[in-house]
Each structure stands twice: as C-alpha cells, then as structure tokens.
Amino acid sequence: LGEAFVRKLAITEYNKLSVQDRTSCLAALCSAVLECPSLYQELEAAMREKDSLMKRLREVQRDEKKLRIALTTSSSAAAAAAAANGSDGAADQQAQKAEDEELKQAQKAELADLVVEKEEILARVQIVTDEINRMPLGLDRRFNRYWHLKLSQEKGDAFLLIEDASDHSLRIVKDKASLDTLMSKLNPRGFRESKLIKALEKKAQDILPCLPAQSCKVTPPEASMDFMTGFKTEAWAICSKEYRKPPSSEVDYAEHPKTFLVEKLKADLLDVHYTLPSDAFDDEAWDGPSVWIAKVKSATKVYDLRDILGELEGAIKDKYLDADHFNRSPRVVPGAWVPRDADFDDDNDEDQGASQSQGADDDDDEEEGYIANEGDVSWLPPTTSALQYRLRCLDAACTFRRSTKPMCVRIDAYKYIQRDNPRNKDGTNFTVIAANGQAKVTTTYTRERNRSAFPAFPEASLVNAGDFMLNYQDFQKQFRKIGFDFAQVAKHKATEAEEEEEEEIVEEPEESSASEDQSDDEFYVKGT
Image (cartoon, rainbow, N blue to C red; front, side, top):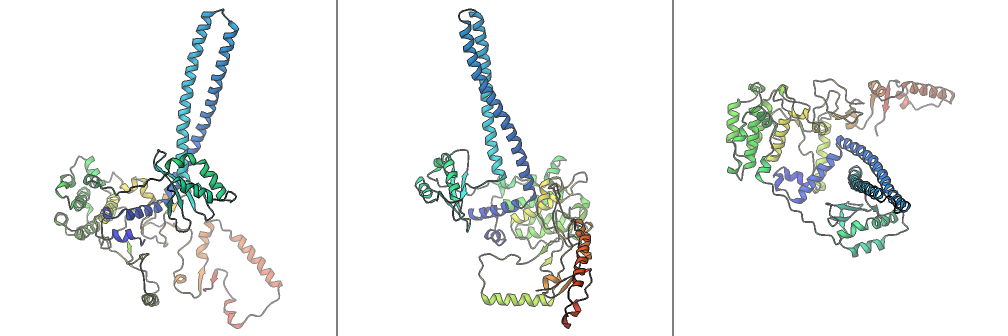
C-alpha cells in the first residue's frame, strides 16, 4: 500500500486513472496472484500437461521415423522388383505399381499429418514451459537480465529487453547497431556472458526481425456504457431463473449518460434487496424496506449511497450471510499506510515518535484502530468503484435461497482470496493450505478449531524489552503435532546434568541466585 494509484482510488474512479496508474494497479494485482495458493496448482497442472505432451511427442517422432524409413524402402523394393520381372507380366507389374503408389500416397498423407501434429505439440510445449517458468536469455557481468518477449505470433511483434538488476527498470535494444555494440562488449570468456552470447546467437532468427524496435502505442481503452453496466449480480441471476423481473431491468442507462455509474449502483442495490427473502431483515436495525427503497431512488450522491449500503448490510440477519467470506465488523486502522514519496520533517518525526511512545506507556494492550459496527461503512472511499466492490462481496456472500448455496461457496476462486476474516479464539487469522494444495478458509468466532501449530505469541514480548516467561506446557501439544520428541530432550537434559556434576563447582554471584532454581516446565528468555 501507499502507491499513488491507491491514494487516487480513494477520491476518484478507476476509469479516470492514467495509464501509468492502471499499470501499477495491474502490477499489484499480479503480485497478489503470485502469492495465491491456486497458482501452485496451476503450475502443477501445467507440468502434468507438459509431461503428457512430451510423451505424445516421442510417439509422434517415432511414428514419423518409421514412415520415412517405410517410404524409402518401398521405393527401393519397387525398383528392384521392376528390374527383376523385366517385360514379363506387364499387367501384374502395372497393378502392383498402382497398389504401391496408392500405399505410398497414404503414407505421405499420414506423414504430413504427423508433421503438423508435431509442430502443434512443440508450440504447445513452448507455451506450457513459459507458464511454468519463463527464463531470461541470460545475465551479464552486472547481473542484468535479458528477455525476448513476444507480443503475438508475428516475428516482428517482439522486443529484446534488458532488465536492470538494481531497480528492475527496462530498456529496449532499439536497432541492429545497438545489438552489435552490445555483442562486442560482452566477454566470451565470462561465466555468465559466454552463455548469454550463445543464447543471443541461438535466438538471432527471432531477434533480428523485431529490429528496429517499433514504438508501442498504449492508449487506455474507452469502455462503452453497455460494457460497464453489463455485469449482472447473483441476485439478478436468481431472479432470472425464477422468471421474475428484477428492478434493474427497468432502468435505461442511456437516459443518464453522466451518472450512469450511480444509476447502476442503485439498480444493483435494489436487486439484492428484492431477491432476499422478506424475513432476511432485522426490523429493529433499520427504518423498514419501504423507507430504504425511497432513499435509494432519491439518492443522487455517492456519499448518500454509501450510508444506504451500510444500512442494508446492518439489516441482514446473520444466518443469511456467510461470515467466512464477508466481515461486517472489520478492524479499521486510520493511517495504516503511509505514502512512499511523503516527506516528513525531523521535528514532526520526533513529535510523532514521542506521542507513540507515550500512548504505548499509557495502554500497552490497546490495539490500534477500531472495530467498525455492523452497518458502518464510512471507512469506504466515496466512489462507485469501492461501493460496487463492497456490494458484489455482499451479493456473493448472501444466501438468497435455502436450496442454493452462496456464490462464494460454489465458486472455487473465492477459496483462494486473502480476506479480512474474523480472528479465531486462539488469536490466529490464517488461510490454511492442506497437503493436497487445497485452501481452507478460516473459521468464525462460533467454531472452535485450532488452525495454528503454535499458540499466539505473548503480547508482553512485543511491548516490553524486559524479562518474560513462556510456559512450554502450552506448547507441548503443538510440538507433538509437528513431531517434536520430548523423550530425546529429557535424555539430553539427563546427560547434561551428569556432566555438570563431574565438573568443578564454581560459585555464582549472589544477584544471580534467584535464577538458579528454575522449573523445568518453563523457558526463560532474557530480553535484550
């Protein structure tokens, strides 16, 4: 966090961001995907596909070799037979020749099909290999990495990039003269650069057609109104299956060209309310459905719609929401992120550090921020993008019908999203990855399951730098789960005790006598 696009998203819409900010947002999403456990499953699937492709490739190559040998031997045999028969049996010779020619044509057609299949397999193997691990061409003496990136199947639509090892910036080799200069500067005796030279020479047929490098014009796409309003909610899908007409079907967004995003948000809010059962709302938590609908229809500002969305969240009963995928009471920490390019004065830093230390002395156990009440969404940015995202999360977590599970449970993609789940009773808040690679979502307060191999670390160790005790009996059960052998530890202690008895006894200072009689059931950790 702290990126420029994050700060801009707090005050403006996503479709108004610049290309650079959108690229930064895409890079952040890619980083989140790389940390997702489903990525490893995709890599394993790609590896299995590559193994099957390589197996089929070996079979095709073997059949191709057999056909080529058969074509060569059949031609030689036909010539030998014709020379042996001479002029006798001309009719039989013509029939045999026609039969051999027909067989030869069939073998050529089969050989052509095998060649086409081999090329397709090789192309697919290259794609799968890039999915598993796209490797650079090589490194130079400064550990800069060289990449050959293809943008399409056309040879000229590619780039030869140099990634700087220090700041990961990219540079493009613009023409053949620059490439020749680069090749002349590389050391053929160097450990890394010798391999880089061989890789560049091997890829010369693919690199030269893309030189000189063409400018890549990037223009932000202008999404049409139909595209931006065409994504339906789960509530709309359920209404359609029941042959009911949701409220959003009566809205004509073309009549509101400047505020169609606000109208889309209002229509989706009405769809969610319309699809939920009438007994899904707590009457004491809001003013009633008729008043709420009137507020939605009369709202014109995003600030008002944010309060209306919070009122809907707070009115839905707990049994109609999947609490593992939707948290109505998140912990909000104001100022949790700091802009990376922000400048702070030394005086301000000192004042801030003094205030923080004073606050820590006043109440060491107090956690930062506050837990938002159900229905309080004032922490959301007042943009249609943020409210739509929150509404879509609510829509996916709602149980609209008893016979239909929420969308967050039906779709596997929701299992791999890191979300702000409520803490468990043991203090953990983790997404557990099973041995088979499947992800298990953390539990709620009402379920008693231990999701952690170790109990929560004592908060005293994080606040005070003094001495503190850890009772290892609390860890004993968890240690056994991970295979810790207490018998070996006891045996090691007995051996150490025997060795200490044989050694000469050395008197200790009086001030350390208090720590001589320590229980074996405790670890003593000295703060530094």
